[in-house]
Amino acid sequence: MLTAIKGTYENGQITLAEKPISNQKMNVIVTFLEEDTGKKNPNKSRKAGGLSGKVWMSEDFNEPLDDLKDYM
Image (cartoon, rainbow, N blue to C red; front, side, top):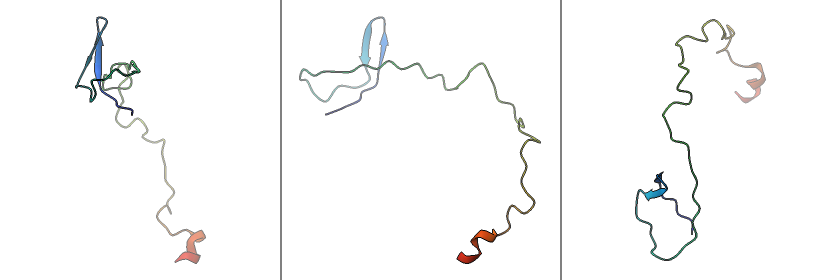
């Protein structure tokens, strides 16, 4: 049986966020994750309108496709 329990590691100690479902001796695997700051790159902010003038759509974008005539 595999069970995942979130916890924190600080000063050499692991503190689990909830109690494990078993009191028996079991093997465990500990995976250390980088702390989530909420931003992928905190040093770089996105600018609104950054792609302005770089994206275009054909005038007939919403017109029916000739390839699909047989299906209509």
